[in-house]
Image (tube, rainbow, N blue to C red):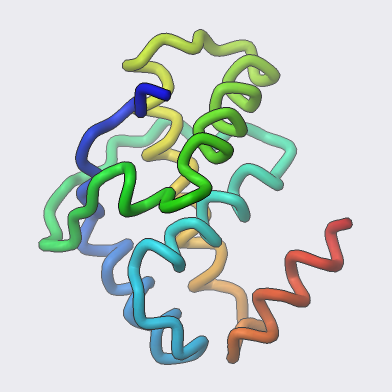
Length: 129
């Protein structure tokens, strides 16, 4: 499937939040933490606020690195979410919504005082089911 965005560049704020998550969870790869964050945002019932997100950090990855083996599934989840929220599923809308969901999810995970180790992420995911 054609990804909505070729390269993902995070804001400095998101990078700082990911550094905190890395320390707490001991998950060293940015892409894995970003997948958790993206899914965390998708679990919210409301769409993310349409705020401008600077691309001012040195953290950058391709869509394939972000998604790994799950890249097609994550893209389908994004398309479904855009459809459910009443947005289009054109490439530009998907890219914008992806960035908004990713950054919102990073903020939610970094701001959650209950996430102190990797098991807390797993508990967060399994409690929603």
